Amino acid sequence: MSITPNNGRPFRAYGPRPPKKEAQHRINENITAQTVRVVGENFEPKIVSLREALALAEQYELDLVEISPQANPPVCKVMDYQKYLYEQKKKAKEIKANQSKNAVVKEIHMGPQTDSHDFDFKCNHAEKFLKEGCKVKVVIFFRGRSIIFKDQGELLLLRFAERLAEVGKLDQMPTLMGKNMSIMISPKTSKK
Image 1 (tube, rainbow, N blue to C red):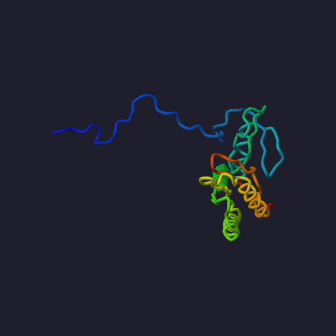
Image 2 (cartoon, rainbow, N blue to C red):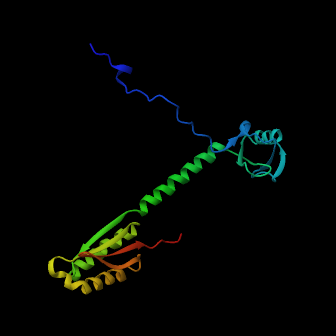
Image 3 (cartoon, rainbow, N blue to C red):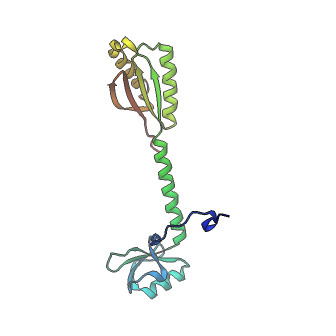
């Protein structure tokens, strides 16, 4: 009969526990200063004792939040702290979503002697990608001896960038790396 220690669950490493996350701001009774500068939306900023500031916050049924503890006297704001935290999380989430959206790069591949119909077809795809907010990397592959047509490939890439000038801007001029030549096109940001 074998005995499984800790009911089959892995042991917790002993030692000091990780420190608990400290609150971002001191609120209400956790504020240590005796006098504070109180600011808020419904009244003029003023310097009062901590007790008066807490009474003022209670009068408006809000929290007293220390927003600048290094100031002399510390600055405290009368606000709904839970609503403030919620808005901060929401802003952080939006920023993160926008960052990941901008990171998408779509690739379009062509040869140096691409036909005009194929060129138009690939331009339409690139235009659709740029309108969605993605970056587009256009790559021309030189297979075998087709490297002798690198001037033709560069002209093709510049023509591609010129065709998409209304919806995108050229980030880098054509660069040759090995047997590939490429350009990067970013979407133009629309002003709202």
